[in-house]
Length: 193
Image 1: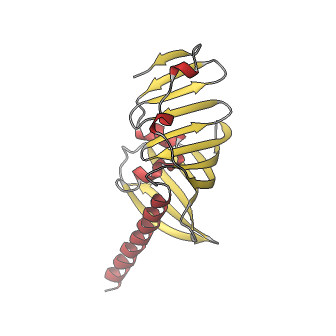
Image 2: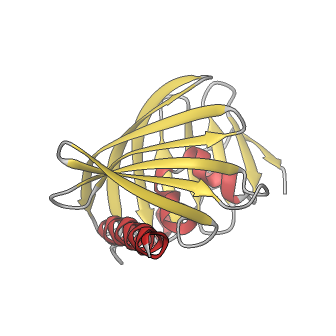
Image 3: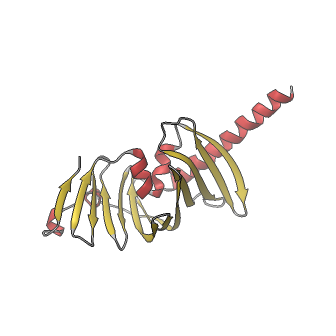
């Protein structure tokens, strides 16, 4: 009987964790689009910038680079060498540069637990398959408005943390998520697909 009660409690806990993630995903999946500021800290260094999201598309800028992703193709413009790398990124590669990609990950392949920390929920996601490139995530969500505030993820043995602020809904044109070579006429384009 105690085992059944414990299993039911764990199931209810996982459901509330999923519910928090569902609500957090809803705050950043406005059909017209969403913009936010972010700061990324990783073993390799830190940077900050802005990100615009519309569905699976995103556009991010930092002092070092600009990234466009139209849902399939990614263009990364490196400012220091005037070079654009074109690729079709994997799920793990997308998560490494788009803190909001957790909205596409959590629905399959992860077990969840939830805790509270002051005014926030902290949802812990643990991959249920060794094949997942992102083994573990912590998503911090504001209890009041369900906006994600931080995404911390483990790839290999390295942690990357994204702090997210100033989330705003905004009407974004689809063209914003595709690289336009006319804007960078001297850039060398390297196709890695």
